[in-house]
Image (cartoon, rainbow, N blue to C red; front, side):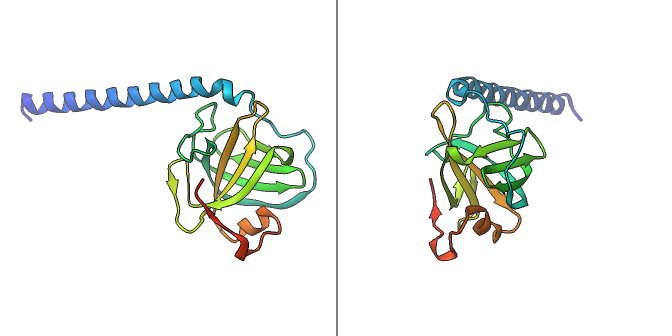
Length: 171
């Protein structure tokens, strides 16, 4: 390997490191900008109501600030995809993520539950995502996305909604 080859490799590695550092800095800045709008992250109650359905295995796709399907929340650990078990309780949804703290979405905060094709940079045709739109105590409305291993579970997680009523929302 010649000196010019080594210099080229070093320059390419330096540029890649610089680009990674700039992306990380941008992600942290996004989190700081969103912190006031997100506020305190809701936690699950000490005592959960009756389990209605689940747990259902899948992937936590992410949360976005509604109605913008690409405006990913970067506060805390909400911005990272993770393996998840989603359970429907009589009083809300519990997402137990493999990477990150559990998420609790209380029924009192629910705005809507729907199937969608895209959220947080993830696109799955045919309504392959379950999206829960809910309101935080700060008043900010959030879309939280879940991709189940078995899409037939969506009907049970959403309640009595029949297959013919499902819509392919693209919030």
